[in-house]
Image (tube, rainbow, N blue to C red; front, side, top):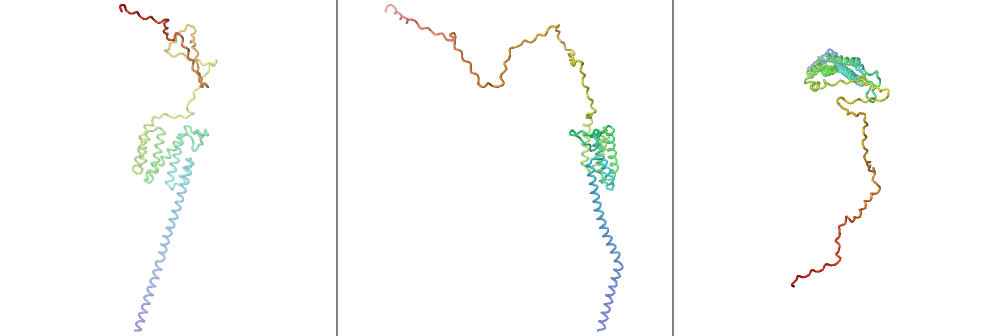
Length: 314
């Protein structure tokens, strides 16, 4: 019995030793790949977080530069931001649209970007005023940028907002050049591109189509320096301005050289005092009645009348 128990314990020890040896072999065989895989996953997660944080910082920096350039109002600065951050299409295209808007605003105002103005809204320096060539150059720059934005973004559905913005700019340029048919075609294209994705812009385009006819016949607005100044009338040598003659068809009565009689002078007109008198005037005294005005009195008889005599026969 004791030998049997001894053999059982020895066999159990051998089995346990074999299991430990198998586990050691398994660990030796698979530990390195597992550890490497875990390290790769951890490194990838860390790297992705770092890349995301770096990209977010870069986007924030790009937006800050875009905002600063927009406040400065110079299209050259906005185009520089677009080139510097070309890797972020949203920021780059937005900067280009802002630059085109700045060129178009200069064309409308007739002055260079960010020109100082006086109290009446006129340029402080005459050299900041754009001449005809300068106006056309700024309008052409705006058209070129708008057209480039539309061509770059029209094939990307996730950039439809930039396509619509460029089309609105092209329509504004066409209207500035009095090309109403071209502007109408662009507004129709905006309605098609915006569709149900951006219905508010399609509605704006439709309203613009309805009001274009009302603004087509507006009179041209001239600058103050384009309005001719009337020459002052020349005074004669004697210093007197000759009076014009009577109009045609007006008959002047002949006078034959006789003097024109003067109007008779009327009685002087009493001018009422401007201020009331200190004391009211006394009422005029009533005149005494004259004898002619009094009623005639019946005179009293000198002697009383005699009684009448009785009739005869009594």
